[in-house]
Length: 162
Image (cartoon, rainbow, N blue to C red; front, top):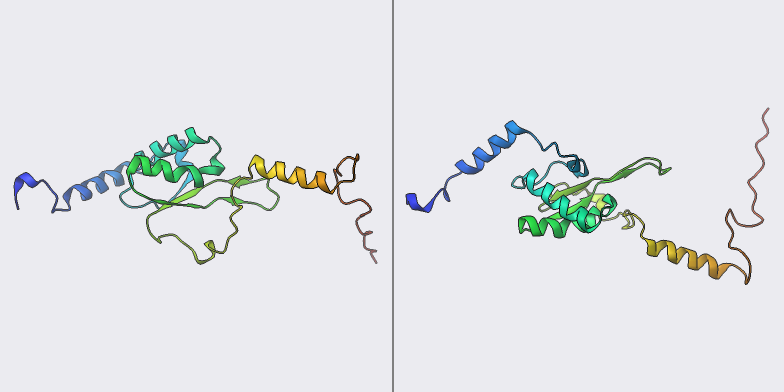
């Protein structure tokens, strides 16, 4: 092996980098709370933090990381990495935690992911405008759109107890 060629044929530099990463641990940057682990092996936390800064500069709403993070990762790393939505929400909407998973290939893809509906992302202002236009079109001329349940609908009476 030619010493001038560098360490292209050895595994020493990646092993040393991995060992340093093991001792240092994961990044403690608060923005990394939006990233679900594991990440691709050769993707450093510093690169992800830099990409998150670019993504938040494009749109500060973390719910849109699925859309804003891939171009930022491409700009920082030069690679096309995939970003999956791993956000969790309860039924009432009182609790939600936005997280994304960065992957390279099919690692971390579960079978039901393709069957999920796309509107897991935060609703846009266009959705609200469209919804208001539909309600206004359904309302009779000169009347206010209904603010509550359908007119004439009442809940059923309570069950009798013995």
